[in-house]
Image (cartoon, rainbow, N blue to C red):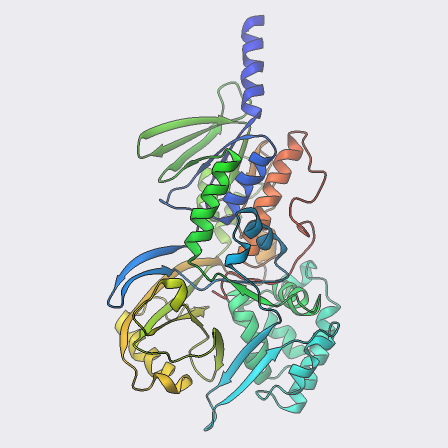
Length: 491
């Protein structure tokens, strides 16, 4: 190579080092792109869909009740979700997804002859006394079961969720070892664990369960206060997120798929081959973030990037089923509730957010760990769930059903099975400049919006450190620690 060629190659490598390509426009990819662009990198974001938001999105539906904006699933977050709260602030959406002033969850048990309503709510007292009054009067457990829950909570508080030994056992085994009855598991631990982990206790890693309960319920009195979007999710995760990316100078390519990630010709940096509406394009960059599902990441990773890339294929997935019912009248007075003694899990009022007009009420049922129902026909689900809604909501008896439809996310989350922790890679790979993001990576969290945002921050931080631009401050409050519970949904 001549001196001129060497100088030219050095200039090309230097220019490449100032560029970044992020693959995937979900919360992880959007976060990574914002962080890289804010640090001065020329950043391109590539997304296969015609929108951003990943698995937390909205769509338009011409319904028998009129044109609606429908969320694919009911997603919530908690006050302890510092990363997702930062994301809301970053895109200008904090006021659109407010938090409860204090945790208050109505819990209806319809199994007895006379249904009973209980509440899980907190006071301003310090942990763990903030839940003591609620637990002492919780009608769905016996006095002995309530006392045993308190003892288990204290034992849980002493655990380290990052202990690999906890990842190897299931949550149910630990609960039973610590004196929890089947009823306590159903009426309390699974009531929280199923929507946050997307698994029942026997199918959930104890490490992830400990992280959820320790951070969400045992870290700070307000940690579990619930927040959710009062507008369609697409308004936040797509429209406002895209505007934030534009302001940051990110080039966003929608309906574009990355076909390959290969070393650049001179061996410095990477060439991303992408195919979109206007044909194929090659982008060269020093930094590439793969913020795509684990199976897709497996197909794009350069050789040698991970010591055991096939481990990504061993990270299973779990489904979430969402049932949407529009009544011709108001049948629910509360914004949401959860139920026992029925297949119905969590029910939210989505009337205002959907744009429903002309009277009536739109309810969304979020059914996690839905392996047995995810492929059932709509007619079967209608026959099953409309009578159940009449059981839990007496006002629904005799009400007209203007519309009934279903949304299915068959791979909504990674499966939080025992042992999954050893399969989840961190953001750094052995390929210089290649980084991983996504809720399935090693965030310490289950598959939640919080975990997704944290993964994007972690990938961007690793990339900037590798470029000699380490962050002097935490870009997201609390993002360096092991956190607490949110919300994929309560989806």
